[in-house]
Amino acid sequence: MNLKVSKNNEGQSPLPKRLKEARKKIGISQKELGIQAGVDEFSASSRVNHYEQGKHSPSFEMAKRFAIVLKVPTSYLYEDNDDIATMLIQFYELHKIERKAIIEKIKSDLHT
Image (tube, rainbow, N blue to C red):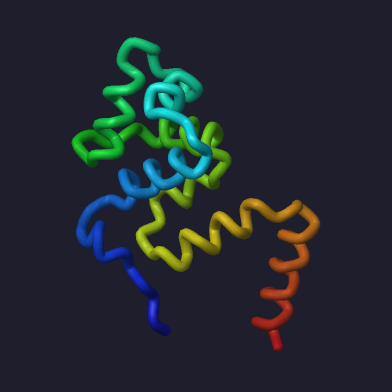
């Protein structure tokens, strides 16, 4: 099995890259992301910038709030494998019934 780990983040947390990618995908500023996640508006931009630069790491609770605002699973922010990160986003965007069908199919295939 060949899993592609992002070369840009080798040995580092993938969170800075994933946070920035997800924020840009929905087209909001660092300040807006911070404010919507509950960061004080006067420090929101600089705090998110520090997270995206990898200078500081948010607490897990803060990462969960960012994920809610960004409409991504929290696990996406921490996934260092680009293929799995893409899969997480695609799976997350599916309807609950579609997710359940995929899980059942995987379980069924594993027992065959």
